[in-house]
Amino acid sequence: MRTIATAGHVDHGKSSLVLALTGTDPDRLAEEKARQLTIDLGYAFTTLPSGREIGFVDVPGHVRFLKNMLAGVGAVDVAMLVVAADDGWMPQTEEHLQLLELLGVVDGVVVVNKADAVDADTLELAQLLVGERLAASPWADAPVVVCDALSGRGLDELRVALDAVLDAAPEPNDTGRARLWIDRAFAARGAGTVVTGTLAGGGLRTDDELVVARTGQRARVRGIESGHRRADVVEPGARVALNLVGVERHDLERGDALVHADDWVLGRVLDVALAGASADGWRSYMEDAGGVTRAELLVYAGSGEHHASARFLDDGPHFARLRVDVSLAVAPGDHLVVRDPGRAATIGGATVLDVDSTLRARHAVTALAQPLGPRLLASHGWLTLADLARRGGLAREAADALASAMVADGAARSLGIWLVAPAAVDALQARAIDLVEQRHHDQPMAAGLELATLAAALGLDAARTRALVDDIEDLTTDREVVAEVTHAPAGATSEAGAALLAALDDSPFAPSEDTLQAADPGLVRALLRDGSLVDVGGTVFTRAAVERARGVVREELAARGEVTVGVMRDRLASTRKYVVPLLEQFDREGLTRRRGDTRVAGPTAS
Image (cartoon, rainbow, N blue to C red; front, side):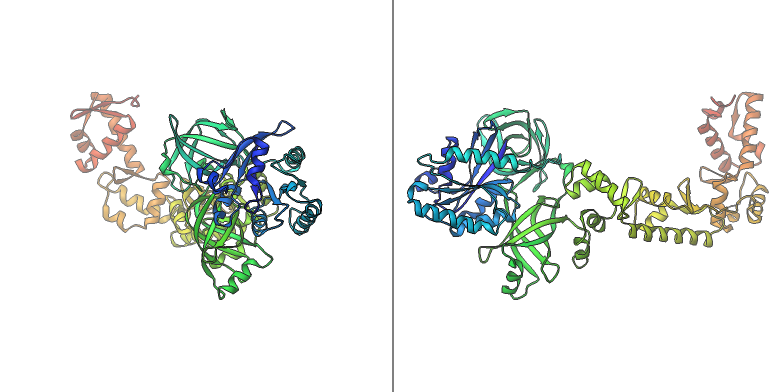
C-alpha cells in the first residue's frame, strides 16, 4: 500500500475528490458535515486500475487548521494538489505547495477540479495559471488532470495518473528502522488503545515491542490493520492502525512517534540546516526580527507541532541548533517545517543533521558543514557500526558501506569495533605514549602503566583504551599493564631487587614491614609481577619462603597425615600472624583441607 495526502486551498474540493475516488467520505466529524468544511484529518482507501491499494489522508485547506494539515503530510512522500477551476490559484494553494517542498514531497498529481463549474475559456485559463505557478517549483513536471468530483469527469484519468506517479516515484525508504508518527489515538471498545498513522522507515509485525519517543513508555503491538484488513506484517508507506498493549489512550497524543528503541536516538537537541520558504526566508526573518541570534519557534516534525528554542549558528543563517520541548525520533535527513508563532507564518524548513550533539554550539558549524560520516565522528567521537546506523538514520548495510568508505579514504580510523576521527586518534595515541614514557622514567622498576590509570588519564573506558594501545606498534599490554615494547623492568635481576629479596629472606617467615615500606613501590610491584614476591592474604613473602613453607607442609602430611598451626609455627620459627595466612593459602590451592584445628591432605597434595 502507498499513502497519498491531499493539499490545496479551502473549498477546492479535496474531500469531494477523495469521496468520488474511494466511496468513503473523509469528513468524519459532525461539525465538518454541518459546516461542509474539513477541520481535521480524514482517511479513505481504494484500489487503482493497476491493482495497487492506496490510502488517502485528506487535510484541511483553511489556514486556521494548518497545524492539522502538517500533521497529515508529515509522513507521506506523494501528494495530490487540488486547485478549483472557478477559484484558481489561492493563498493556501501556494502555502501548501511550499510546505510540501520543504518536507521533501516532490512527487504527486495536480488536479484542476470543479471543471464543470466554469466555461471552457475559464478552464483553459485556470490550467495555464497552474502551469505558470508550478514552473519554478519541484512540481514543474507533475501531471495535471482536469476533473469534476461531482459529475465524475476525469476521475478515470486521475486514477491512471495516480498509478503512473506511483510507478515513477521512488519506493518508500526502508532502512529497517520503522517509525509511526501517530495522527490519531483512541480507545476502541473491546480492543483498548488504537493509534493510526502512515508507516515509514521499516516494517512492523504483531508482537513487536515499541517505545513512545516522547515519554519512553513501552508498548507491544497486539494487532495490525491496514486498509480495513487485519495483517501480521505491514510495510513502509502504508496507512496502518495498531492495537497496543501496555500504554493507555491518555498517554498518547498526535505527534508522538512509535519506534523500536534500539534503532533510534531519542533526543531534544537538533542541529539542522536551514532552508527558506522563499529564496531568503530565514535571512528575511532574522532581519525583520532585528538581527536576532535566538528565537522561540514552532517546529513541525512528522505529525506533531512542538515548541523549540532556536540558536542560529552562523550569519547566513545556514545552520541552527533547536532545543525542542520533547524528545523526538528523528535522524539526519529528516525534514522539518518551522513557523513563527507570533506572526503565524511559515519561516522555512530545516533538515536534521545531528541529534544531541556533544559539541558546543560555537564549535558546531565546522562539523555540520561536513558529510554525514565525518560530521557524526566530529560530534560523537567513537562510533560502532550500530551507533553509525542509529545516529545516521541508516540501514545496517548502508552504515557498513559508509564505514568502509571512510576508512578507505582516510576520513576515519578503525580501532577494534569503533570508528574514530584520525585527528582524535593521533592526539590520544601521542598522549598515551607520553604517559607510558613518563611512567618508565619515574618508576623504572615498574612493569609499566596500569591500563585503568591510562584510561582515566585519557578520559576513556578500558575497552577503548585497549583498542587505542593495540594500534600503537611501540606499546604492548600485558596483564592490564601498558609498557613500551622495549621496556625491561628491573626486578629480581637488578641490584636493588636482589638486595630487597635478600633482606626479606633474612627473616623469611616474619618479613619486615619496615623493609617493604622503605623499598621503591615500583620495584615491589615488579617483584610481585614476576613472582619473586608473593602476596599471601595481605602479607608479602619471598617466593623462596612460600616454597619452603609448602615443603614443610608436605613433610608433615607424609609423616603424620596432618598438620597444625602450632607445628608449622615451631617448624618455621614464626608466629600465628604469618603461619595462618600461609595455611589458608594452601587450603585455597587444595594442598590442605581444614578439619577443625588440624589440616589433612587436600586434592592436590599427591
